[in-house]
Length: 86
Length: 278
Image 1 (cartoon, rainbow over the protein chains, first blue to last red):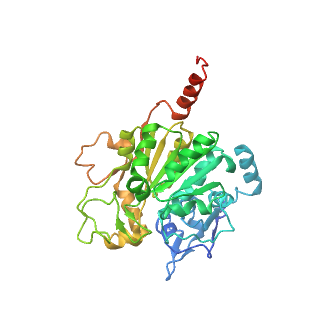
Image 2 (image 1 turned 45 degrees about the vertical axis):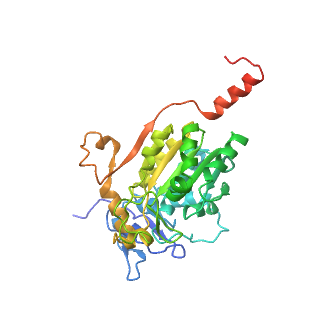
Image 3 (image 1 turned 90 degrees about the vertical axis):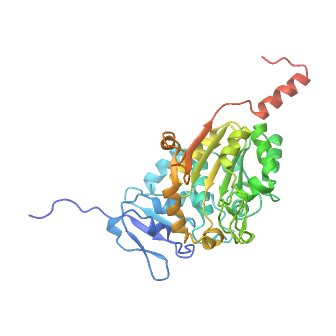
């Protein structure tokens, strides 16, 4: 019997290479191991399907060089949130 | 949880040189993120905020953010901030200092600003060393640790900034660490909303100067150290002193009400003019 559960789309992780200094905080404290470091110490997305979009890498990045976006967080959802803040 | 970085980018001055000057993995970057998130959460407008900083690594912080900013002389950030607040009490004045700035050169200003209870928020980033000037020991360097000027271990005891602020009369004192960045957001928010002198001590790391000489490893390892040695105020309440010897408490240490300087000063002005106060 085929697996009827729909596979969740993994969150989109963007690493802005120009700002990243390769400190390794995002990869080292990633709770699921979705991020890893290459030989030079810079992070890359090793296993995107493991990401649970907890956002700790975004919160702890000292250089504001990583973003995590999941499907529900599209333009519309952001607009609503910004309105709520104002 | 997503959208955190986008929010931060809204408050940065993109015409300044990025990536910023701090070392890879420096806690000041994490603290800056928490500061921006807390300001955004409180709903302050960019023009309402005045960010004052002194000299040192943290002194570089106001350059990158799009608020009213003031970069002042070493240790005198609080005095400039006092002037700004009294000249225009509508502004929300936030002072960002390092440990050397706040309790060494500006030590007297710090305790007297707390005693006076003027409505400011002081954020003190404690990395236990003078990072920018070459790793000399500061008043918060723990006993027995090596720095470039105490190569054969530090013989002095360290200041406990938060406890000092409590004793000096600050109305709100909290301690956080850059490892517990999400908690730091909440502490900063509470400090901003408090009327009176509020202090938030942020335990950070200087892996370039302090960590290297004391073999504490990289930024990641020093953040791991913070994770292992931090203990919440609630948890620490039921523990013996021996257990707490190598730990530091995080959370709100004191939250009290005392007369605020600005309100009292307004009353004095009214009295001098002969207006009766209800």
